[in-house]
Length: 144
Image 1 (spheres, rainbow, N blue to C red):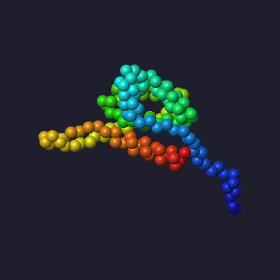
Image 2: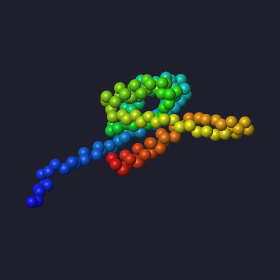
Image 3: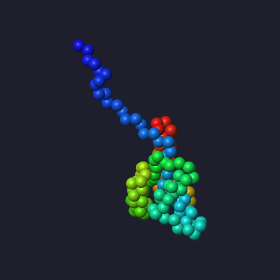
């Protein structure tokens, strides 16, 4: 006997969320830009108090509302405590907006000192942040 499968429930994938306008923020460069703005203009605009103001400003310039905001940054035990107020502001903004925080670990590069002492010098780099942003851009372009 042949079974009629037309009425059997077939699991369906949910339709993908269509994201037309996405804002991807490089957290370190945003903070560097705000610090430079504050120093150059003798102005104090704490990012943690003005995060949503900045998003609204960018939406005004773009003449659109962002469907999703992705904040990509790198932190470690030394830098994270300095940015807790910013992360709290982002967490509060999530009640109004779709904001995803992608926090990566710092990587360390080593290079031999060029002064002749032959000592190794280590410094932190945000090696994964730029790659993550590029992958997100490709992902959004192909699958949204």
